[in-house]
Length: 274
Image (tube, rainbow, N blue to C red; front, side, top):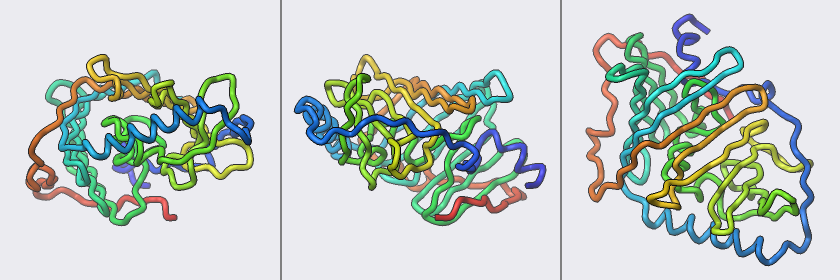
């Protein structure tokens, strides 16, 4: 790894899963789940499908506070915009007017431009890199933005098994869900927490050791206000959504482009292979 890449490792990295693994928790799966548990999941699935039907162009502002085992925390501001489907654009600022990074992701490409270093890192392929905003996260940028927009279906899926637990309504996510693990729902079917460590004996994904809590905006109880992610090795990130707009018209292609300045050095970004 060269010096330039090591300097950006706090912005975007590829998770080395064996180093981040934790011992999975072991709740008990019931054969005949309570009817109320089924009702909560049905409410979740219905809302998730409706959210996909309502999806629009959007623009969001967010504040990100993050910590790693080696530091006491930092803060960044993010401006994110896009249409219902990829591509999506994001600008990251370290302060007022201090642009430090630009990101663009579409179905098969990922581009990170480090503005101060005049360097860009590119990846091509459907196997997306996991994203990091100051600390490594267990989601791709695409999935993270789905969560911020309240589009839970493409992240947690629409099928699940049910767990018997004193901690409320908890569900083992189906094998087709990009985010594997256990999801906790409110009585209204809203996701309240996610645990990336699945029950014993079940296959896991990139989320081992991670948990996420969610709370919701007062003006719209179906849209997340904060995502609080923690890893048992000392990583954490709190994403506070400060503003959210839905737009009637789609962004034109030019608004979603990321044009690199002349003489920008472009390097490949190694991604995990399936």
